[in-house]
Amino acid sequence: MKKIIALVMGIAFAFGTAGFAAAQTPAPAPKAADKVEKAEQKGNTMLEQKAACLDKAGTDEAKKAACEKKFAKKGAAMKKEGAAMKKEGAAMKKEGDVVKKEGETMEKKGAAVEKK
Image (cartoon, rainbow, N blue to C red; front, side, top):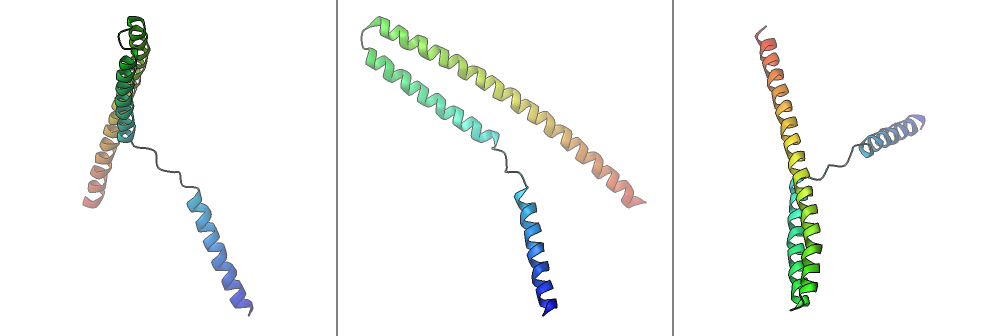
């Protein structure tokens, strides 16, 4: 009976430890493509909002100017965000190139070890 209880406790400990380890793994980061798609959707809705604002203004030049000014600020912010995303993409590409070079050197070292 003691052996069965010890076996059950051992299995419970093993599952608990495995579950704890699995809970510590980080969640996957959002992909850059998702960010780009969201930015594009935001840009499209911004254009739709600008068109609606201009339609609403009608023939009133002051209201049209206010709409243009409002969306010019948003457009500048979107351009800054786009530039930042391009920089981030370039940095990721450089990082990927470094990792690729490291992988190639590891392959060369592995081939050298196999020859010995």
